[in-house]
Length: 189
Image (tube, rainbow, N blue to C red; front, side, top):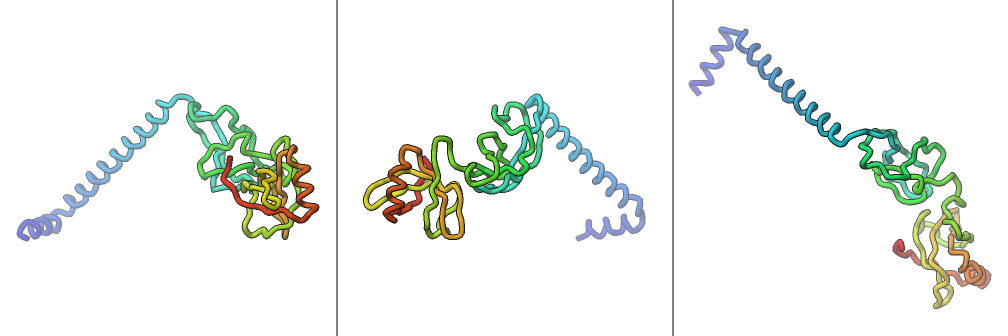
């Protein structure tokens, strides 16, 4: 306690010493922050050239509009099919996480038909839509037979747009006409 009293007395008699200590502490903190920022810049430069890409700002589900910001990243991290133009009006073909670089294969033109894979066809299936979302993978059954593996292309008020491979389209149409379609969620292939 004796030393604390001595410090108080010193500061009361010599206020310039207090302000000198504050200035020295501020200078030390400023210098260390400056060195830390210089280290970050040096690390960034060590990766080489930078390239501007579009990066997802939030988690994006299939069929949702793309929310992305333009950022500079090292060229070594840029995928070959990275999106170069702003994704305005485009929707996601697949799930995107926040901070993920948006590629051409992640983006489709707006509309449910855009979520139908190439070589596939989509059918409207009356179903409880609360359990499904665009991009969900399905197993389509008719009775005890597997009709096809499919994907949800769009969700309406009381029906789903279910995309299936073209070779399974006749079986799907027959099952729909017989009102015998059962949809089951399935893991991605």
